[in-house]
Amino acid sequence: MAGSNFPIPRPKDPLNAEFWDHCRNRRLCFQQCGGCGRHRHVPRYMCPFCGSPEWEWRESAGRGKVFSWTVTWRAMHPAFADQLPYAPVEVSAWTKAR
Image (cartoon, rainbow, N blue to C red; front, side, top):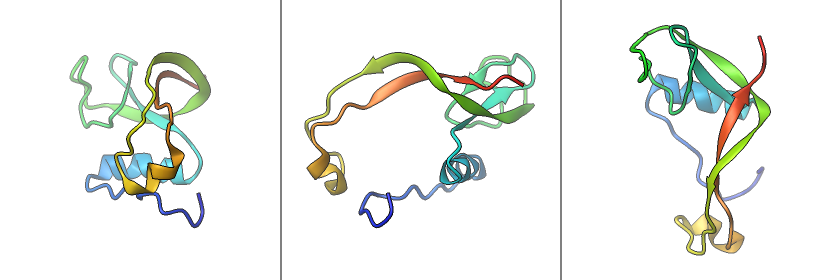
């Protein structure tokens, strides 16, 4: 949101910076393991499922399945105070076909 007072992520790790670079370019991307093919977030250097260090960024297909949600009535940052209540949602996202 241009001109908003929302906090801007300031990643200190190169993998997290790369994730936010994709977001800044209006692309939601996740890592896909080159060993077992599973997707992961948050970004990591090794797969937590099979231990492989091989991976690539894959763009989300823009659809998924709602895993969990809640309604938030208390802002965790002052910039969100006038947005209350809001509903954060956890989504199992799918990536685009190769």
